Image (cartoon, rainbow, N blue to C red; front, side, top):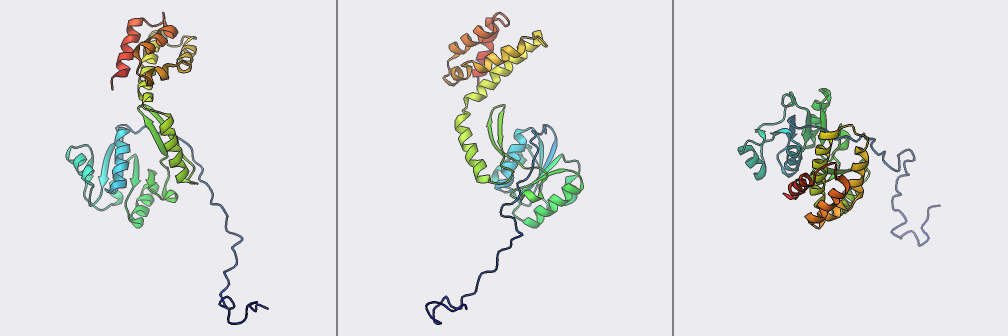
Length: 257
């Protein structure tokens, strides 16, 4: 029993056997269950712990959403130093303490020290503050999805932590699909909607008009930067509800970057 077929001197004869498999260990980790939301954080105080490159990315995302950002870190990237000098962020050149969380709506832990990140998570959770710890979903109460942004359009992708690589791949594919024309497209749709509702809010035909706009070749006309075609499409759908002069003004505004 156990004798090597090639003799006792065979190098495999006395090779240690691998441990038996743990039949109780799950073959696939459980995917996180999430409830997708878009948080309204304009003018709300938010904290980023960590002033490195990752922290810088998180700061930029929060500022783009209109948040009032405080950064706690002993050091900052050059870009964050400039933001602090311009007053765009509040900088605390200190080690993190739970007192930094006072009044914060949410916090992001972005340091390269797992112990610090764990303390940030524990302190935020104990105070009921939403917390995201970069690359540590088990320490988070919210996760930040991969995103495609085109002006007011935001497309968010999450795999529930199952495959961040797939989320990145999908984001790259969607970036090709949702081109820069969507920024202009959303500005024009917003302008039309505001003017239409200002004069006839609650009108039973509004929904049909909005649907005709998004079903029309309006996006293609904007992608080709063809203002005349764009105006003709709007006139065909919206005249006489909105005057041609107003529609031309809305198109001109939409084409301004």
